[in-house]
Image (cartoon, rainbow, N blue to C red; front, side, top):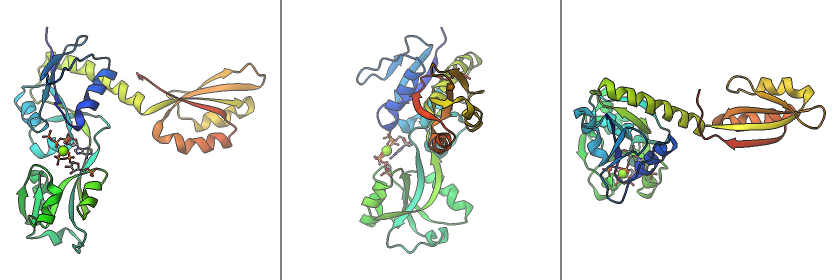
Length: 285
Ligand SMILES: Nc1ncnc2c1ncn2[C@@H]1O[C@H](COP(=O)(O)OP(=O)(O)OP(=O)(O)O)[C@@H](O)[C@H]1O
Ligand SMILES: O=P(O)(O)OC[C@H]1O[C@H](OP(=O)(O)OP(=O)(O)O)[C@H](O)[C@@H]1O
Ligand SMILES: [Mg+2]
């Protein structure tokens, strides 16, 4: 039987969230300690646990069909790998940073400077856009230490909370790229495997939609229903059910988490009471 091959980071930031999204999509994967390969028991999926930095090449060569990987790494490695879906975790930036004492006004200030980075291609492309020539030093980790040990004048690396920059007395001056974990697809996926991928993609979209939405129930006097319904986005139209108490109804709808706090004051002002917010497990549109 044909199986789709997915690469997942063996250990590190992406590992747990990657396994969780498969689990939420109803796919059971057993991954014992130090296991490098596993098969899902209830879906035609083979899982390979690999080093993050090796994954783009495996995709290019078609050794794996898809992968869960940071988009920043795909951009850095190039190749004809497509992004099927952004997964809303491992959000970070690839940024340029300089020591706090560096009087930075524009990218021109980096002309001729030494820059330490784990992302030389991404950085080169960015500098070329502005016609800046700099001396790039490629290092694979702990990049932020480079200016403090006299190795570089600036760095280009991943920034998330900014605490590593802060601890090393650096300030972010340019954001080159905003990244998050994605499902990446090999350029040489077969039509047979594409059918399996379409099924997996459908499930993952349902998981992502559910993760970003809540089910909301509220009570309102009947004469306020019209005003409240106007405020609510809903999948199609909110459900309105009568309460046991005469003249009152319960209104049910789905609200995107990002919009909830904007809507709540409007709903209360329009007469909504007893608002309940419930997580959604899956959402199939
Ligand atoms: N501090 C961070 N916050 C959020 N996402 C991050 C952060 N650092 C890295 N990432 C994202 O997570 C991915 C994996 O990062 P992780 O630190 O686990 O591995 P790595 O250092 O890139 O590579 P390796 O697996 O070779 O050690 C990165 O490619 C990036 O997309
Ligand atoms: O803005 P922050 O929240 O501080 O995160 C940014 C840091 O996180 C990553 O390092 P990681 O811990 O993965 O170590 P590494 O250099 O070995 O990859 C990245 O390379 C930055 O150094
Ligand atoms: Mg890292």
